[in-house]
Image 1 (tube, helix red, strand yellow):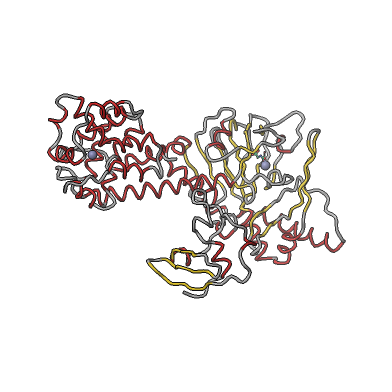
Image 2 (cartoon, protein in one colour):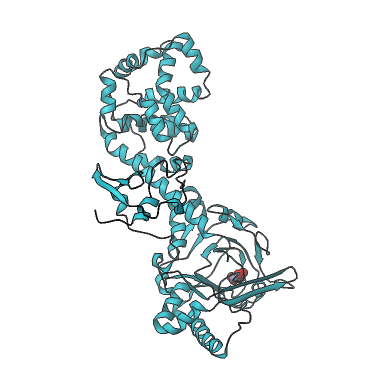
Length: 526
Ligand code: OGA
Ligand code: ZN
Ligand code: ZN
């Protein structure tokens, strides 16, 4: 183990004294660590680095964590796919609204496109007023501004913004005069029957990278000149002083803010202003290069979602021979990114569960004629066929996951030890699912003992293996136990799952595979 940076290592101690176990937040002040702090002793043990510190504290770090590569928040050019128009010859990043709503994978693809390419188009968003707010709400929060929670882009009699006329609008950042600038813009097309009014997008990061390549001194000027952007009407007076090209502390492009309409009056020496205007003009010319202009037409029902800190958007002039009406709103990338990360987390969890079905699930199920996976899939199919609520279909599907995590547990049960697979399964599932899913899983063993007590003929219908495990699990409930069970809020659900469980032992019976339930499971994850 090479020598590690002392205060860095200690600042990242994961122990419960240093970090709140629930939130993971740090419980100490950085300045409280001793200046002369050193590692007194360290050793590697069981995949961890164990450290004894000079102040007596002990820390344990997973070795894998120590060597993880750094990553970022995904906002700089380093994490983008810079593009030119020809990159979309085969189509735009797009999805159908209904599919996006129904399928987490589709939603993840759209949000990933916004992160990587700076935009995506949702098709088939009902061409009805205010739907744009629903789109924003599907991944984040609307940013209300002086234009309201949404704004109408159509020809207005007394426009406070050129956007609300029929003139061409060249590639620009929206609301550059706002601090912070809205990081996302949505434009939803309700009507577009006018001649003209086509939409355009330019990758502002791409344009800035071109400028850096061709005229590095101009690029540098634009990164270090604070430019006043201003907006003023009867009810608002906004101003933000920011560079046209904002780079992060490592010099990587992080934001482009470009809007010829709302640049105010820059002040400075003659040399500074000459240098700025030369660079500004050159950058403007780059953004107008045909090969950088992606042009397409928004039709009613299309909703464009774009990264307003990166892409510049435009429209051509239109004639007033038809009607053109867009509704727009602002939102922010941080929430979109968070939504995407949570989707990925859920996908990873579902992948892990799918792997259990494919791996351990192929193992025999307590001596029944079906494998564990077949058994659980048949139980879910029975629940679905009965028209059960989604949480009960999920509970039926997952009721025996407690047997996984080592086929050992199942074997324990058959060797006369109750492995409490209901509890262990429910506890494991509680990482992702609420009690509406976990409690029927927890109680499905008790439900068997309950039904044996209260339902004549039930016990006789149990399979041989189930009869055997019944005894290991405590046998039928007595009257008091049965009454207590029946009084539990989840009793009815658990009994329902139990009945599908009992039916799900037919050799060779057809049942949908695990993937069939992915969307349903995803919709129940929290
Ligand atoms: C805007 C805008 C584009 C359009 O309202 O910010 O740029 O297509 N509109 O009308
Ligand atoms: Zn605009
Ligand atoms: Zn079962």
